[in-house]
Image (cartoon, rainbow, N blue to C red; front, side, top):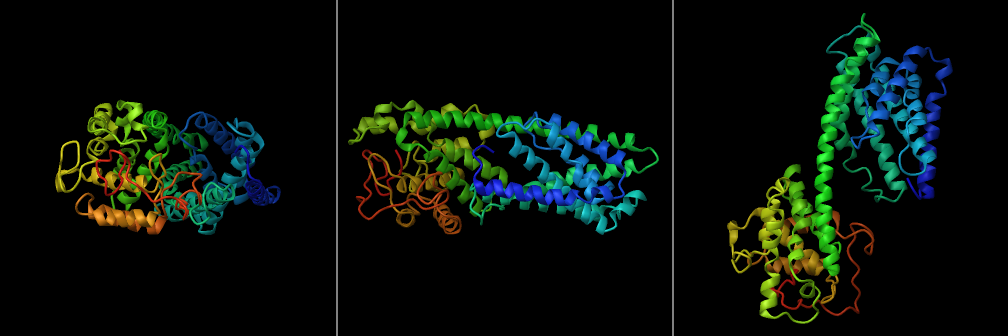
Amino acid sequence: MEAVPARARGYVAGVALLALLCVLPLPVTRAPWWAMGLLAALYAACEHVVRRRPGGTFYPVLLAGAFLLPPPAAAFVPLPAALFVPAGRGPAPARRVWRAARPSLAVWGAARVHWALGGRDAVVASDFPHALLPAGAAVLAFCLVLTALDGGLLAAAGQAPPHRAWRGLLSRSLAPVAVHGLAGLMMAVLWRSPYGPVAALLVLPPMCVSWWAFDQYHRERAAHQATIRALVQAVDIKDGYTRGHSERVGHASVMIARELGMDDERVEVLRFAGILHDVGKLGVPTRLLRKDGPLTPEERRIIELHPEYGHEMVRGISFLGEARAAILHHHERLDGSGYPYGLAGGQIPECARIVAVADAFDAMTSTRSYSRARPPEAAMAELERCAGAQFDPRMVTALGRALRRWGCPRASGAAGGPGAYPAVTADEPPYRTPPGEPVPSTGAPR
């Protein structure tokens, strides 16, 4: 939370004040102090282990507190962890306040809902399946509070526009927190059983194993991201005029894939394909990539080898899946006049047809050494004109719908901010085809 904006600091202070109000009734609350202290120590120990890894936080103990304790006592459980667990990067006071107030409010809300629905009596009596409904409502309340707080912080810190700050937060958190909630309910029921708190602790080892497995998946995914980032940075360094192009093509490819209703796994593959589509430029001489004048036929043939170079570079990276086909075929045309193999129509892989549209759109809406940016509306008009001959009409239509819904995928810092259309002024010269361009009509990238 370095260089926290004033609005974000005020927001965190307001959240902390609300959390303090939730805990204030604790001295007059009839709560088992030993149970509250044990749960707080257990949660602090779990957080100490979890915070050393990138796998997130560990909620079963917090939710067990929501099922066992009155709301003010449950709100106290996360506070010792914020005081004693290392804060990590950034200013420690701000991080500690946020890490204390955020879970405190969430668990308070969960405990209020659970008690209001009679969940405490169901837990004490081990009354299944009646105990599941209050527990499920409490988990939902927990997720809703976390979503509201996290989205508010994103908006206050300026990391997302207000109308998008909360998008997707609830759906991403609901499933994992529901699993933690089930473990917390098991802990609470065993805690109130004749076997006592020792039996409740037996729930934690299986949860730790599952968390470890998730952590391994997270590490593998991080390694994938690092591999892709290194390749993209190498291309950006070599061809400075296309800096940021790969990320924008990846974003536009995702927009098209989502409009087509693809599942999340394929959407992720399309993102990889868009980001890495030009990785083969690493095999093209730099002087050709940066040449301002016309290319000779021989130089054009060399540049047209970059899809094959790229495919050779990534063919051994198994997690890319069909993205490798998109890297190889994103310059094919529906009429069969593209390269490298002159595929036509349905012979061109679907992922390559998506990346081709995203690539051409970003090329036309970006300013380069040989051309000025077109407005997005003009770029879309050109894509629609060439649909059926060069581009798949279905992909062009999907991109148009996505742009009307979300805006143009520009890099952060572009005019208008993230997601805004690029600024194109009236005094800029008209777009002209880059020298040696194999598809003159659209100005698709070399």
